[in-house]
Length: 105
Image (cartoon, rainbow, N blue to C red; front, side, top):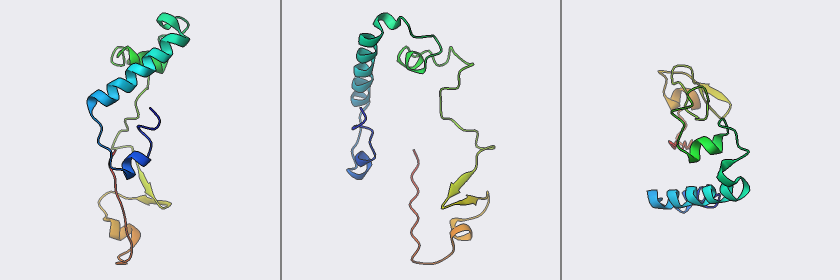
């Protein structure tokens, strides 16, 4: 799974299908079942249990996602805080040799 989601996959421009990702989740589910048969010993709060059992909506008190509130989130690039309403040129300069690569994940 680590190899599949490693940054080298981006360099290789690997395209993932839902089936590929579901296969990896099933492998993790099998490994967890080997270590914790029937999830015995894992608490209901355990992130791997919640994700594998698809109970994230049920457990609203848990913060298992990396979702960030856009109104309270600040983006930092090369040790500079990017202010809303300004362009990259305002923050990084208008040097034509400057290259900025932006990737959304």
